[in-house]
Image (cartoon, rainbow, N blue to C red; front, top):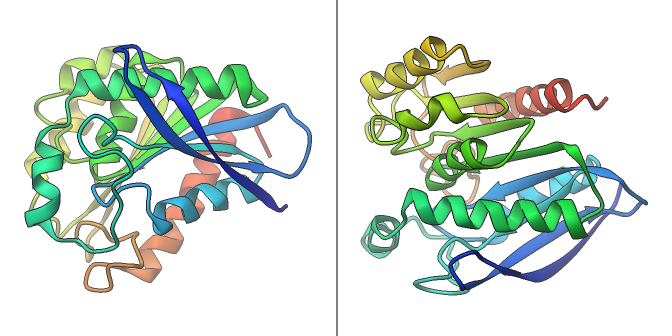
Length: 239
């Protein structure tokens, strides 16, 4: 299934505007929809490629530019934390919530998407954004790849989660130690939320991103992608 890509401008609830990359199937809807949240390197070629992969599977995928309040249009393929960390530190859960609501609104009003078949996913900072999104809009499912900052700061949102949630972690990720990963699973379990928790023991942070060769793990990327698709199909009721 081929994909058609475009860019749209979203009106956000705080009065800001946000650009987003949209990739959709070359077929009539309604379709399942997915919000693809960026990591710190922006809506770059890697992230757009992820959106395109979802579109080729029949999803309408929207990737909002989360840095729109501080550096609109920013993207890079270099994992340079001296450059990226000042941006990351300015990201807040409240802003993630507003941006998620704007992307969800577009999907469900203009994207030809079935209301009961909307999901979100994201990487690192975007994994945190996907977690926040699941707490503020009625998603059917969400996926967080190495979602930094979920524990302990955002665990109070666990009871508000709408859809099932899939967590991927890297066992060698020093930025998200085991105590934090366990805290997320414990909170989900205590709240009675449906979740899947997966650790790739030999992986570091950013293991899915092939543009970062020092961190990329091809086997884990392939396995996590396959598991993520199966998870979405099950929870969105698509096959």
